[in-house]
Length: 110
Image 1 (cartoon, rainbow, N blue to C red):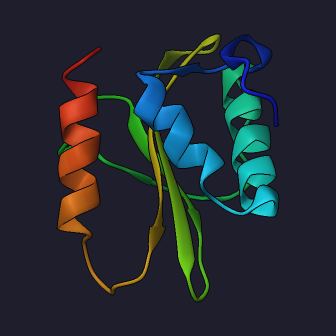
Image 2 (cartoon, rainbow, N blue to C red):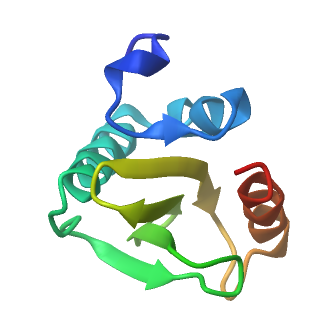
């Protein structure tokens, strides 16, 4: 993946959001980018999701389960508008409070 943010259909909320996505393994990045592209065009992302209404309306977590598990959180108000909030490796069971706090603070930037 290049460093040009304009290559994506989605919009990172800040530079740290895209940096977090790029820190993941390439196959995970590719899966999340494909899912975000699908959401942009109004199509089902094709992977496990969770609605994070506790953070805000339209906030969704994409899930790749395993050991480790990977997460990508975005907000979409309508097809054609997808904001990348955060991406991370999930290593604990249950809610990941630190990463959810990061996601919530980035949501406030919108």
